[in-house]
Image (cartoon, rainbow, N blue to C red; front, side, top):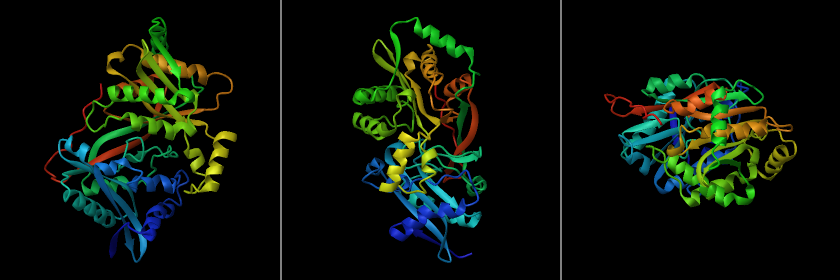
Length: 390
């Protein structure tokens, strides 16, 4: 076979990079084409702040001038220096069922990362936050949540044939909202919190987004920012995140917990926008935006909620705060007129047994499994899984 690997650096290669999956997934009804703009902003230094601390490159693989594969490679200096070995990443991988073709792309990514001081690469991951484009789908043939990938069944073989090993597993939990199989311990925890007047739970208000953005930052940095590979967020970043979410914020889906008015926990959910994106064929021009708003605000086609993140600061873990947050959501979810019928908790790592236990206590079951792989450039070194979250 004669393959040619070309760097994405002009309109044609960008188009081929974006359109290749349309051909590969033509027979897979559960695949949803992402918005072209969502993919492109990952590789735009003006929109992706990660370019301030790193770099990215992407390629398209051709056979007889026909695109048959694509891949991106990237690194973040801050994450690299805090790892056991400097580690970069690969992502946005798509390929025909060919070990030779995939090897050519993985080799190019490895060489590029090695030249920049990396000693390992994770994949498939994102050049950005973990809530999007992270992990290889290996189980659960269901439509992907917004910002997550759906993958062809043979991709796992292509990764493992190259030498990638499992770094960690990612589990997406699902439950129907009207299901009653909640562990009684959740309600017991909620009752315990309710007896202490210093605790309170409230849903978000769009009129006070600046304050909720700061509360989110405080909770996130205390609950998650202490772990390797997870960057603390700034006040500017938190406010930008809230502004981005503002058009889709549903107060029925976002909850904050406080102790003596100090922010200590949150349960952040959003409508699954892929229920709309699947109707847009990758476009987000003016007509697509109007259609998007019509389907979101008027037709209200989003009936699945996505649990993006659930966090409690260490000092208040184990005291029942999770029960209070779930209980507040349950009160609204079981009231007349609540339009969401399903809830999926966007992936929970196998290194987070506490969050997995909470998911199971609320009656959710694993629906999809993704894997984050790691390839050590020195094959004599073992892949060490991330330490467990407590």
